[in-house]
Amino acid sequence: KNFQVLRPLDALVNSRVKKMEQRKWTQLGEPSNFIPRPYEKYNFVLVPLPRLSTLYQALSKTMNTIGPSVKIVSMDEIKNPFLEDTYEGMKKIIARQCKGNPNEQKRYHGTKGDAINGILENGFDDRFFSSAGAWGKRHGAYFADDPRKSHNYTAVDPINKTRVIFYNKVILGKESIMNQADRTLTAAPQDFHSVRGTQFQYPEYIVYRFAQALPYIKITYTK
Image (cartoon, rainbow, N blue to C red; front, side):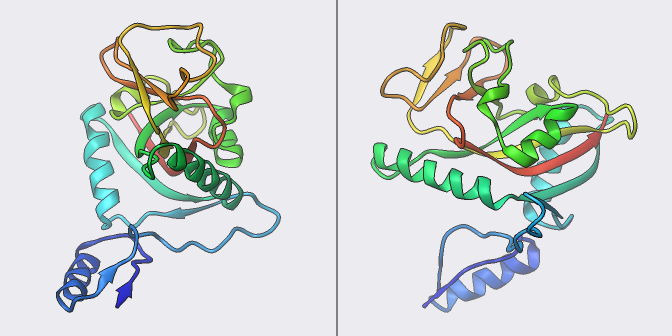
């Protein structure tokens, strides 16, 4: 007997999951929040992440490492079916090349201005990669496992005074670990799917192909 969790985890859901498992039911996959597809005129929809959910609490705790003045304004789960379909296809391709394990991780990405809506609409579009990257000039989307790194790439919105960091699903596959910057890179080295740069204070994770990353949670905050 199997079951699947279709809402964010919180204390109540965790309790019910334990009871199901005690009754010898098997949970299928990871818990997910069922979100209907956006209206046909729109590419994406944002749905508030419940404040009592396990994920909201965990992200809040991590975001507070940026500084004591950080205040979370909102966390919204992103539903963009076109990006999700493309991402899932890429995950299957990389999994096939990695003995079934695509090495999917959750990573942060800070941004600002028009790029915020651009990511919501089109994901991490390789036509707009940064020219300042240490592991590829105008090549590669950069992610961090520490929001303090991502915060450095945000800016205060002049109207509502907020900042935005995206929490993303990233397919790292086989990582090439580099302790020296290399701006000549235009792709991950042959036989690898991503680069992990370790030269600076915070590790950086770089993917070079469209749909190798999926925006998952939009975190809006002030500092």
